[in-house]
Amino acid sequence: MSKRCEICGKTPGRGHKISHSHRLTNRRWEPNLHRVHVIINGTPKRIRVCTRCLRSGRVQKAA
Image (tube, rainbow, N blue to C red; front, top):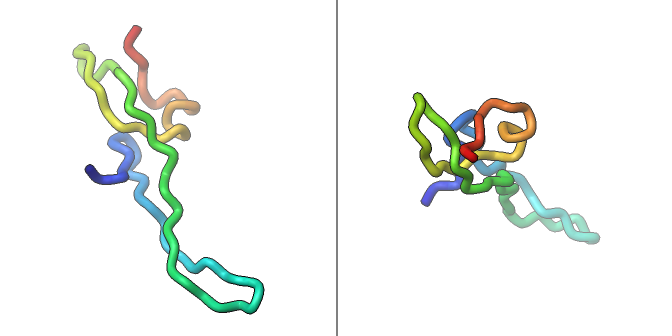
């Protein structure tokens, strides 16, 4: 299952972990995803949504 927000399309970021001696190793920053019941086109569905979309009100949670 992909780590992707189904509303905004946010995906994992990539970069380097930097140690004290400044050696670089690869790492990923995962988006903060939650599986929530939302209303899409009048029907309830369960999708993976990032917390930024939940906070900003881009989705309407099903009761």
